[in-house]
Amino acid sequence: MENSHTEEPKYQKKLPRWVIIVTFAVLLGFLALMGWGLRNAQQGPVQVGQKVPVFELTTFDGEKIRTDDLIGKVIVVNFWASWCKPCEQEAAELEEAWRYYQDTGEVVFLGVDYVDTETEALKYLEKFEITYPNGPDLRTAISQIFRISGVPETYIIDKNGKLASRKIGPFVTIGEITSMIDSALNQ
Amino acid sequence: MNSNNKVLSRKKITFVFFILIFLMFLIPIKNVIAQNDYPTDDQVNVIAKELYCPVCENIPLDVCPTQACAQWRALIKEKLIAGWSKDEIKQYFVDQYGDRVLAQPPARGLNWLVYILPPVVFVGGIVVVYLNLKKIKKSPEKILQDSTINNEKYLHEMEEALNDLNKKEDLT
Image 1 (tube, one colour):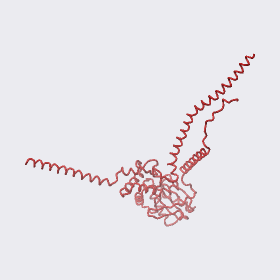
Image 2 (spheres, rainbow over the protein chains, first blue to last red; image 1 turned 30 degrees about the vertical axis):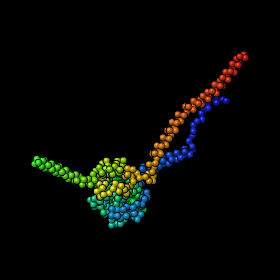
Image 3 (cartoon, rainbow over the protein chains, first blue to last red; image 1 turned 90 degrees about the vertical axis):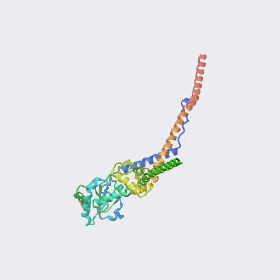
Image 4 (cartoon, one colour; image 1 turned 60 degrees about the horizontal axis):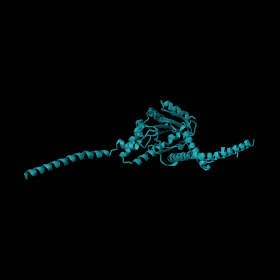
């Protein structure tokens, strides 16, 4: 009898519990996916001391080079492109450094041509008389492993397959290149 | 009769003259058709519009001013000259540089979300809005109905109370 006129009208229909659960699950899944993408996008380049994932480079000559076959050697991975002007600054020095270490058999140079056309890339290699193995970064798979931010970038992998050092931007002198390689050789 | 012949021969000459003029027009037209075999920038841009260079994010290849993109457009032209179709050229770019060069991601794997989520969210939004609008429309009627019921009860109680009061006053 008391407070009968103050009772709330009972006309509101609630959504089924499973609909609410599914909606929240989809929403959370979507947020998790966005978070994962954001984390990947914000990750910087491979860190020094970190194990570098194995990758395969198919050269312009069709030769396949796998980095796990090169364990015990220092690998110099240079990212470049024919449209990249700063890459031209270091091209001659890199070739000179390669010729310096070539006979030792302890150092391997790999040129990775990033987002380029083969015609222009081959012209570039001819222009700078580059003789070490070079190949395209097919489907940008190698640059994604290193998470490069541009070209030129050079990564030096030690004999155990760990990143010894990296250079963002062009090398200015050959001494800069050899000092990095020597320190990787002495590790 | 003679004059008739003259008129006829004049007509013939005029006819031959127009035929020759017409044939002269055909010669350059044939040349233009031959030139069309060489791909124009517009034909290149039709394909370039559907591609994005990873170096210059968010800029379609047809309007990208960088040297890298100019090389890509030159490559498209090379492939068109070689007789490749639009799909073959796009597939070549995907093989070389990955799916991310495509303006429209291929419908596979997680890419499905791009195609499924927007319509699902849109339809879901419409359903929610519709249900809420329906609720808003219904609720005043219901409240009115409920309020009349409650008011009647209340009035009934009030009447009873007043009657009791009157009876008490009469007694006094």
